[in-house]
Amino acid sequence: MAGLGEQIARQQRTMGPLLVAAVVIGLIGLPVAAWLDLRDLSERMLRRQASEISRIIDEMRGFYGSDVVGRVLQANGAVTATHNYRDVPGAIPIPATLSIELGKRISVHDGSVKYRFVSDLPFKGRAPHQLDVFERNAILALRANPKEPIIEVSGSLFDRQVRAAAPVVMGQVCVTCHNSHPDSPKTDWKVGDVRGIQEISVNQPIAANILTFKYLLVYFAFAAAAGLTFILLQRRQSALIQGINKELSEANDFLAAISLKIAKYLSPQIYKSIFSGQKDVTIATERKKLTIFFSDVKDFTAIVERLQPEDLTLLLNEYFTEMSAIALKHGGTVDKFIGDALLVFFGDPETQGVEEDARACLRMAVDMQRRVEQLNRVWHDRGVERPFRARMGINTGYCNVGNFGSDDRMDYTIIGAEANLAARLQSIAEPGGICLSYETYALVRDLVRARPLAPIAMKGISREVVPYEVEGLLGELAQRPQVISEHTTGLDLFLDVEAIDENGVERAKKRLSEALLALSIRSKPAAF
Image 1 (cartoon, rainbow, N blue to C red):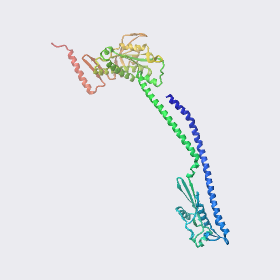
Image 2 (tube, rainbow, N blue to C red):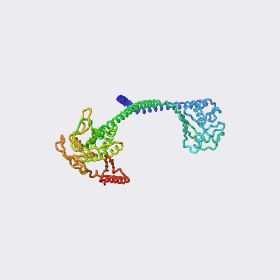
Image 3 (spheres, one colour):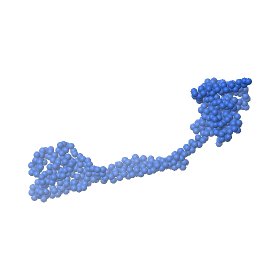
Image 4 (cartoon, rainbow, N blue to C red):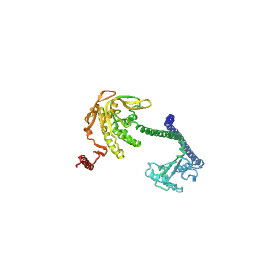
């Protein structure tokens, strides 16, 4: 993973300047390329226009030299102007004929500019003008409105053509000539009438100008190459990142699996505080006032002797699983399992205050005893003859809590005489009972009814300790569901008051009444 990271870092260091250079070139190159191409296009168009104008002037000069000056010099008599000047010696063309002939000469070449002088009313004896749709429509439109120019743009993707038609307006001289000429097809002309049109068409092949944009084409080619290079680099980097993401995903999955396994060895509160960063994994302790809970199973050795190792393992694991779930529900920190014993404390790493921690611990102990009774019924149905009877001790006092051990291996636990006192209280409790120290009893006295036992002395504690045995429940604890269980020779009783339904209540009453009656009959002396 480190190699891939270094490779990506090198690519980033290389791509950074390249991207900056590409952006700078892109910002500067486009306007420069456009300006160079526009300059070349302007020069090219000016040269073409100059060439066309020069050709048109040459045609006009040549026509003037041959058909005007030349005929004047060849004339022996008077020079006249007529439309059929070629048939009359010494005649020169009239303006209309001049325009027609010039149009023929200019348009005969394959140039970009063409000129035509056409009318739908030519003189008799002259070949009729071949008019297309544009020219016919232009004549009609200009006769209706001579001041509105007629322009048509046409062509294809690679060729454009512009045609402009202007009216040929009759003047006084033209009207006099046409109305009196024998070959005129119309003799009622008036000044201002439109006789025909003169048309100029300009053809501009777009394909011929494509190469004019060579700088833009080079720019776009460079931009395409740069873009393709960038895409390839991005794809390569994406592949590297995907590889890293895959390795990270695999590493995360591995770490998640490891963390779940580690969580099995830690209390949930400690696990969360370590992985959230709230606690450092260092050797450090602090002194806090905690409520410590200690429990073990009465006569566990005898139970062990009756069970196979596999059954014992299953039974003990189920017991600890249920007890740990109850401890977690009430906010307790499960410290450790010692054989059949369980150590839980309240007040670290999370606390609700000394009093509420003690009350939560008592609620937990009551729930554990009730759950043990329920489990005994389940285990009894499985064939476990001897039930579990748990003894529990609770004490409140100051302890050292934190990480103990070496730099390589440590344990989060509590140390102190108050923790030992909880274990001692458990040892003097009745099976199925709970024994409290006075410090704990003072904090929970509104929840239980307890009686003091004989004072005990503890190593490390200078005072005598008065244990309090819980005899009954008060307040909220008394309202909790009751479980009555008893298993001895000839007696197998289990009653869960909350779980039983209405029909079951009546049935239980009936069966219990029958049992009491049977016991009463047995206890009466036999009659002789």
